[in-house]
Image (tube, rainbow, N blue to C red; front, side, top):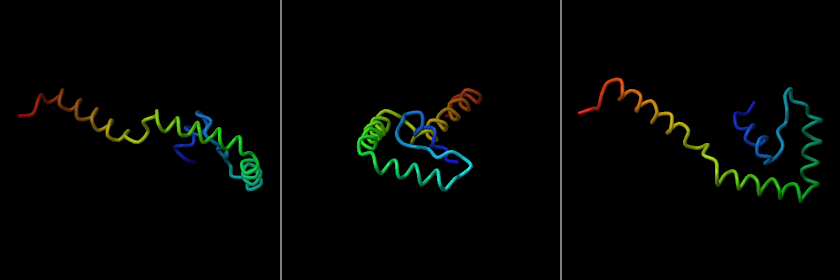
Length: 79
């Protein structure tokens, strides 16, 4: 299970292999991906667009900011 797989699925950036793992299913998906230049180009475009617009890399920084802000409201401003 990959925590990022929903980004791929939700934004149509590629294929996500479902669980439980099935080697034959993986083989079929890989063969299909390799046979379709057009589909790979579409996925690439969508992935690049997603990367330009989505903020999935600074979630830890935003969470820390929220925690610090909430803590400062409870204790008052620092000196």
